[in-house]
Length: 319
Image (cartoon, rainbow, N blue to C red; front, top):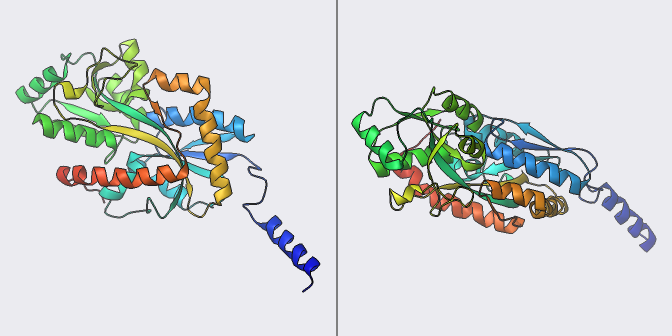
């Protein structure tokens, strides 16, 4: 084979490579694995709009709720690894579900290409204002005096909000019925309507209702108070040692070309550096991380190690 022919064949193979093609050439779908209206949906839509501007194409949000986020995550794991279907993952999809589900629809490490850890988000314990409690201690006292009348809503079985509730029950030594929903949006709707009086929710999705007085925040779940709600105490101020939080990160299907992953990561970092996005994240005390793929891969492993004893001690299992 002559040198000229060798170069021609190499050029032809490069042109045919998906990674070498101009990316993106069409719109991208960002799968939100929960119903519209929740924290992951709020963060996802903000990021999708700004990433689309950087990528020069639309990033369409598709909500695929169900099974604590594993349905949408499973769909992305099985998608074509070309960068046109990506996932807004959470601690639920990439740490809790793999520990809780008996039948695992995907492997959180092997089936995904990490892109970027975007934000870390506080959770909040809130109640419908008609419930006659104003503090965490008053809620504990009410639960102990009449344990049959209280229930709390969460975004679904096995989600970090469910485990936030179970950890609260364990550490406070109370019994409160868990009512799971397919995302924070439907859960909030029922708590606002007082069908369920209590909710563990992500602060971003609940913040507007707290500010308007439609929900009463009793405590945030992080170790420190949230800057956007400095007057709301931490649950740990009443129950020392209590702490939970969630996070949002971008993932692509495993096998996505490294060049495409890097382009998505670059767009994600640009989105999180945008002043308007920074302001929106600050409104609900989300801490911006905007990591690279390698850092996100290590974060997923660390989160699984952290939550494993919590899941085991709470004895949470799902078919």
